[in-house]
Structures are given as structure tokens and as C-alpha cells.
Amino acid sequence: MSTLPPDRVRRIYDRIGPWQDSQAFYEDRAISELLAHGGFEAASRVVELGCGTGRLAQRLLERHLPPDATYLGVDLSPRMVALARERLAPFGPRAEVRLSTGGVALELPDAACDRFLSTFVLDLLPEAEIRQALAEALRVLRPGGRLCLAGLSTGVGPLSRAVAKLWGALQRSAPALVGGCRPLDVAAFLPDARWRILHHARLSSFGVPVEALVAEPR
Image (cartoon, rainbow, N blue to C red; front, side, top):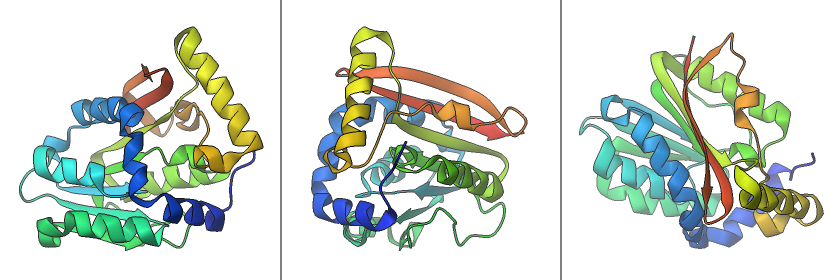
């Protein structure tokens, strides 16, 4: 399935800006599932690929991470980076936000974090880049660390499956209308030889198919 190039994705999300937070009505069910099963209360260093406005990072830093835990978010949209930096400024040096060039490679050493987080981002990427992002997660996670993913899914039950089909059709014909995202089966990208899935929930949120997945490196 075709996906948008990074420069077009950047333009879309620069334009969306703070309106991105309006998607909370369907995103938050999957995100809450991640927060319940990601073990963030024991984390010391979180890296988020695609931090958006910093809404999830704020929630983590306020309610879930230990007081000495740190956070790094990266995003390809300059406007999103500016919004996230403003939102996370009260956390001082605990929170850092960097602008990405559009690729999924992270300028981090091996074993740099114990939580790799990405929500509603992999469903923007072509399949080759999804695999690259997961390989990068494997590289930067410490032993015992966790991969925490949420995104659009292929649906559970007739309503959310119908929504997934409609969403996929829109993504193919007018991808900007859905922010470039499409329904995805993210578990299919996690080979058993490399990842152990600890929790995987496929959910319907106001009819929108979403999923949350937590895994650890083998």
C-alpha cells in the first residue's frame, strides 16, 4: 500500500498543529491500555518516536514515570516539536524533544532506553520503514526493556472492521484526509525470534479500530 513521503507528512502535521489533540477521542483507549501494561512506573528512560504535541509525554511525566525518569521525543514536524517543547517545558531537563529529518534512525547509542514508545505513527510508514523502526527499537532498548506501540488496527467486530475498510479506502484515494495513516496489523511485523509479545489488545473506540501492543526483546 502506498504511503506519503516524509516531506508531505511534515506539511500535513505542521498544518494540523494543536488540532492533533482532537484525535484523543479514539486514540486514548489504546494509549490507556499501553499505560496500564507498559510498566512505565519502573522505567528510567523513555524514547518516543513521533511525539506529536507532547500530550502523551506530559501524561507520562505527570502520572506514570518515577520522579527521576527522563524522556526523549522525536518528531519530523517543526510545529509539533515546538508545541511539545512548550508543553514539556515545566519538566525542565527531564524532558527533551528533537526534530527528526524524517527517517526512523535515532541518534542514540545502543541500549539507551528501557521503554521505546510510538503511538499512531507506524501506520504512517511504508512497510520497510516499519521494520527499520522496530529494528531501531531493538537496538536502543536495554535488556528487560519494553516496546510500547499503539495505532490503527484492522478491526474487531463488524462495525470497526467496516470502519477499517473505509479508512483504508480513504488512505488510498485521499491520504491527506486521514493524516496519511491506514489500519495496520503491527504484530505481523514482530518476528517471534526477536520479540516476545507481553500484551496485545485489539479494541474499538467509538467504532474506530485501534490496538495496543507491549513486547520485549528476546
